[in-house]
Image 1 (cartoon, rainbow, N blue to C red):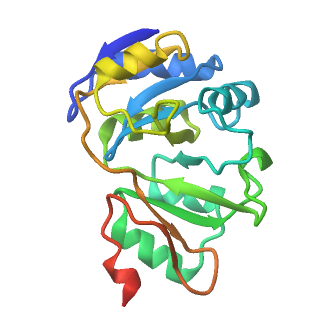
Image 2: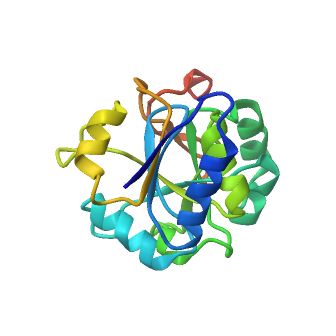
Amino acid sequence: MEYYELHPVTPQLRYINKAVEVLKNGGVIIYPTDTIYGLGCDIYNREALERVYEIKHEAGTKLFSFIIADFKDISRYAKVSDYAYKTMRHLLPGPYTFVLPAAKEVPKKLWTKRKTVGIRIPNHPIALLLAKELGNPIISTSVTNRKGEVLFTPEEIQVIFNTQVDLMLSAGALEGKPSSIIDLSGEEPEIIREGAGDVSLFYA
């Protein structure tokens, strides 16, 4: 596994470009977000996506969210109601995953049975730069051990994933919670997971 330490606020573009090259070649990477470390690949690379499922020990049915670089791109990948648009505009970038009806642009492998997708715009320059420079969304699923426990430090992540992923971008220890997951695909918002983001407005 290639390993690079980046500045968390002004990341070195040369390391971002190395990661993007790996993604374009069908690789799997680990990278920091505004919550915890993410495991990801290009959403359009089917073989890489299968590798992510294998690494996560998932059967291919789990909903993996994905990161997009800019708010204006959301409508390419999801159908957004007026309410959803206003809500996300208020909270993004931030530690939220929003579940929305899938648009045809998204590979069906990433659709749930209800034809929804999970979308992230994290408040972290490294994650956003990766998606921007790649030109495609990237998978965002939490880095955990076999027990499903979140791994927070680069050192423990390196030990476990050294032979499983192609590259890791480190920004130091991340002691956060996973993102809050809010389903905006129906008439009323539904809190799927209460995580790092404030969800109090959805209880009003």
